[in-house]
Length: 277
Ligand SMILES: NC(=O)c1ccc[n+]([C@@H]2O[C@H](COP(=O)([O-])OP(=O)(O)OC[C@H]3O[C@@H](n4cnc5c(N)ncnc54)[C@H](OP(=O)(O)O)[C@@H]3O)[C@@H](O)[C@H]2O)c1
Image 1 (cartoon, protein in one colour):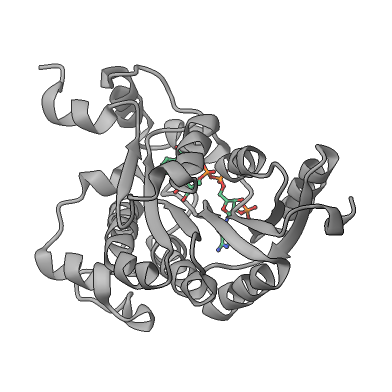
Image 2: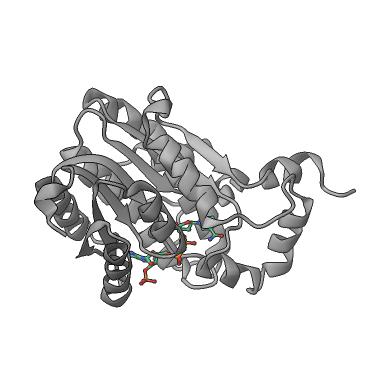
């Protein structure tokens, strides 16, 4: 692929797991793809797959829990061209990680991404971070909500209600994902000053390695019941999430920022109104 021949429009996809690859394929056409992931092996495989399909793809290793690593990724994207879309799908879930890892990767890591890409955003840039329907299950104190929204990033994990050593990874995940939703609300004003937008997508249970691991994990029966009671009565697909990402990074959503789109087949709505009783 001769990179001189493709557009200088850059799409950054962070996390090359189930959702990340689907998003990359959906947004790639005619643009330069910069894929980023923690694991060099899965990054190499993802770049190879995208190039094999004819896309102009490059890879950059990143650990989103490390601020400097994310700053380097943003600088690499900036050099490639005009950053039109950043879709951040990297993360860990309760069956695969401790509470500390969830706070450091899902909560702090997402704040690093929002900060680092604000520095290189330009008119038209749209960042989408993948949160979770779990964030819609949160019932947090107003003090913690405010902290998650506006605390300085290097202080984000310092709050009396955030216990990094907790044995309850599921609760940490709910706090972290609610934190993602609040963080983009608070960041939208600064992003707007650059003519750029920032939003979250909150998926329901989605058929990726992570989603399937949760379904077979300790809370699998509860998660399955959420699917069974939902309006859609099915598990989500990575394409469902990619479609929402395409909308939020495209021109038809230009009046949507600081917001969250819940793509959960109606699972959260049914939790409230159709509990099966
Ligand atoms: N699947 C679901 O049911 C579901 C539901 C709601 C929300 N979500 C959220 O959706 C997002 C994407 O999930 P997915 O289902 O696509 O999961 P996935 O297939 O496990 O992909 C997640 C990717 O994130 C990467 N990653 C993990 N820690 C990282 C770090 N510190 N720095 C950089 N990359 C890192 C992983 O890298 P490795 O290659 O090292 O594994 C993996 O490639 C996550 O934020 C998740 O919480 C998922």
